[in-house]
Picture 1: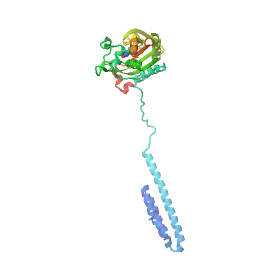
Picture 2: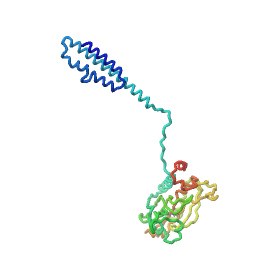
Picture 3: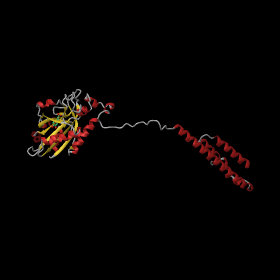
Length: 339
Ligand code: DAH
């Protein structure tokens, strides 16, 4: 029995030695120490061993089991270490390699300019509203004092869907919606897309405007001019120069056109401003009392003023962009360069 146990130990040790992965090592463990294992069956059948030998055989068998267990444990640690070293080698990361950059998103230059404008107005107490891009002839024209066949309709080449429904040509339609819905006094701004049948390097059939309307008691041209002066300084800097020219819009009386320091040449004089150093920024005026009345506002008690800047033209000029379409192509290489 003693020899048999020694033989078992030797065999187990040599088999353990030969194992080169955890799986085969486990098979060896089962072979010797498992329920049906060689050593287990000897330990289980101790009763059959003559009493005088039993103690010695028992001790030896236990010692063999311990040695086999230790050999298995040692080999297992070695194999695990080897596996770890191998995977570390395979999955090695060179931390000196340059990283893969994450591209940061950004707002479109038109949105940025629009937001800047809106922030200024919101700080002045305006409420931002939005409204339909598809509207009726009434809101886009008639209620703004542009009846059918009025020559002022030629100022805007419109895209009609039916005789009565069109893509709004101006955000001024929101003046009418606001006057119908809100009780004076109020100050609203409405940013939005507008549509005209225009298409050349400085005109796109879709472009962006911004409508501002103030209705209150005793407000007029001087309030409008002061407000525009503040806005232009906030937009283009304290040194901006402003010039006011008389103009004509059916919904304002008087109507004015605002010029400011040319943002293309910073006032030095260039082809855009025809050497004057000033270029047109937007139209404005005192709301025509007829327009107030048509929308149910008492023009004896209330007056109003409005202005309507275009967004795209300003972004074009400040960035010296030769064609408005470049703004809508969504070519990141181009857009990234804009202010
Ligand atoms: N809606 C005009 C346009 O698209 C711009 C405009 C002019 C808006 C004068 C106004 C204004 O509110 O008072 O040409």
